[in-house]
Length: 316
Image (cartoon, rainbow, N blue to C red; front, top):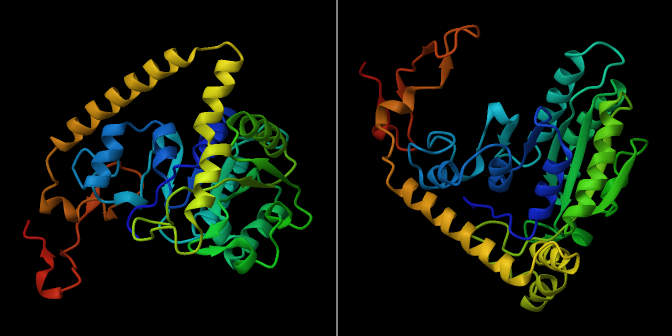
């Protein structure tokens, strides 16, 4: 599938972001749109990237699965299942390398789904992180299904927070943003002070299918989805909590929601007015001439298309 939605799992990213420092590093899977927004992106940039427009966060070269924001310490958006975890471990290594022994470190987090949790590259990354006591957080977003396969059918070990063996782990209610925030504050403190990595299992749920090509109802029924929406929805939990605590009235929240919808629609329309990138831009940002000079590039002689006869050739 080309587009993987995050609705149902919003409390995970929001709670993590509330617990983190801006300089902490974050890498995730292709279900990355909300995290891109949290780490400094705009609706216009995100929608522009989804539509393949030049205003996109990755200048229309990444699409739905590849959002990045270096300034926000957000490193993707990785399109290969589980491949972000070794990269996250490298970010953790860099964070430890950058400080003197004994000093607090920025952490790195690699978020991945339950379907990726048994991959060998993750075990190898965990071993390395443990050996070197890296400030790495292995975060499993357990939305109950690896693509269309339930956790009891694709993993012999369903307590994912225990998968690190001797690496400590905790399980957090990923539908409760307050629980995520408090839990991740503890995890961050542990990892940033030289204690090594930690496993975190976020118990969450995705409302839609794995991707846009998956209706999401062939391996589960509509009643299950509706029941979760009505009893555990992360947004409704926040609304109810704010009303019960006297922080806002139902009417005030409705007005806030209207204001947000209007602001989102405005940025969507602005994105749609953006131009598509020129074909000449295909050859940019492929090779760097050196690693010292920003923007100093080498240009390939062509970009190969699936049909070689339709490849784009550099005529500059």
